[in-house]
Length: 91
Image 1 (cartoon, rainbow, N blue to C red):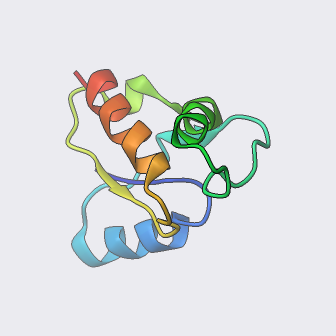
Image 2: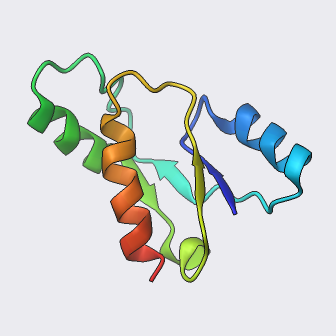
């Protein structure tokens, strides 16, 4: 299934879904207003904030192949946290 990394990637994920027909789900939500993670200078702090900022709905990803769509890839901290978390919760 196609899953956007909120919020900026939602239009791109919908476009990918429309073009491919792969099911679309908003399986990741943001928790509070942590702000932009990429501006944090220390990598450990960026990863810690990314871990806190996003929540994955395990019911939506369990047993599914997930295509994460991200449009704001600067340092990759969000993806480095969400990819293994999706894999763990999808089992």
